[in-house]
Structure formats: structure tokens, C-alpha cells
Image 1: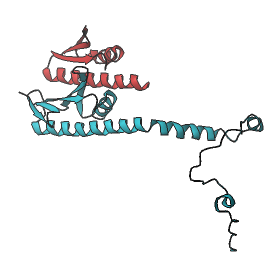
Image 2 (image 1 turned 180 degrees about the horizontal axis):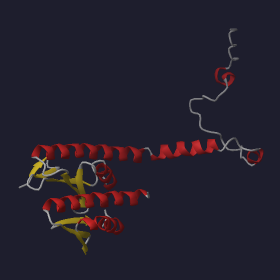
Image 3 (image 1 turned 90 degrees about the vertical axis):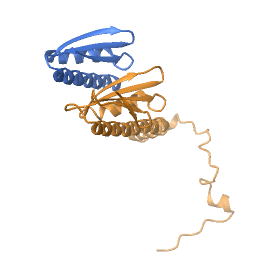
Image 4 (image 1 turned 120 degrees about the vertical axis):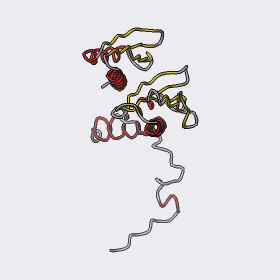
Length: 72
Length: 154
């Protein structure tokens, strides 16, 4: 299992939710809230796949959070 | 085991193939950090975080399998350069905002065309036009007490 932590001041909920939705077909993904952070857990059959899905999910959420900021 | 590089700006974790940068929020504003990371989305996996009120963190993992220490070090170095560029660019934008706004306003006003007769009628000509400490707008005769030199025939 690979865990990602997204700070709420940087990643809006909409960006994290959208990223989770987009990558759900590729792995088991759970999202929960813990204090000031969104915790996303990625579980896949192979560690390499987990690592890749988690990495791309993080990048996607970062892109969406920037898009939200510039109003794109 | 992690090892610090770039004067403690980043810590490498070769086992995980990841580096973690810790940035002063005053030197590297959040928007600059996000912009720098955006430029690396095709090469690295990145997660931006916070460490207290005055620090940002960036977790960097080069794509394409476990990265060697050298590759990790190179990726972090390039990201650090990009961070500096973005932070400086943002500072220039902030410093020049008033100038940019003034030029944009004048450009838009100029694009609206010349004023109409009605606009000129309502214009207040009683105000001082502008300050002229060097006397640039002053007439030649007033400035030098002589008549203006005649133009030489061409």
C-alpha cells in the first residue's frame, strides 16, 4: 500500500476527489481526512504499479490544484 | 537512510528513490513552488506539502523505476534552479505590478479612440496639466529670453 498526504491549504478537495476518480480504474484507492491533510491510499497487485499510480495521481492532483488557482 | 544536499535544502532517500526539499515560504512563495513543480510533471512525481507555517516541502521522485543517487541529485538540482527562477519571476511581477497596470490602462484608453466633443466640453482644463521641474514644456522665448533659432533651409 502506498500512502499520499495532500495538505488542504494546497490541494482543494475537488482536485483530490477528481484525481481519485480518474485513477480508480487502475488501483484500489481510498481517501480519508486527517487533520489538515487528505490521506489517499493506493493499493495494487504489484508494488511498481502502486508506485506509478500513486505518483501519477499526485501529479494530476497538483495540476488540478493549480488550474483551480488560475481559474482555468 | 537519507542524506542532505544543497546546503540542507534537500534530503535524498536513495532506497525509496525520492528526495524531499524543505523550502522557506518567505523566499519561495507557494505559487512559485507550484509553478516550478508544474514544469517537472513530465519527468518526476511531485507532492507539495507544508512543514509548519513558514515552510513548504516538495517530495520528488523521478519517473521510470528506482533512480540512482546521481539521477536523484540531478533532478533535485534542476528543480532547485527552477524554484529560484519561479520565485524571482514572481518577485519581478509583484514589484512591477503598478507599472504594468498603468501601461495596460493607457493602452486600453488609447484603443478607445480620441475623445468626442462632448467629452472635451466636460473636461476640466482648470487643473495644472502636469509637473515640469526641468522646464521641458516651457516656451523657448520664456526660457532663454530670445527668439527661437530659425530652421536652416534644406
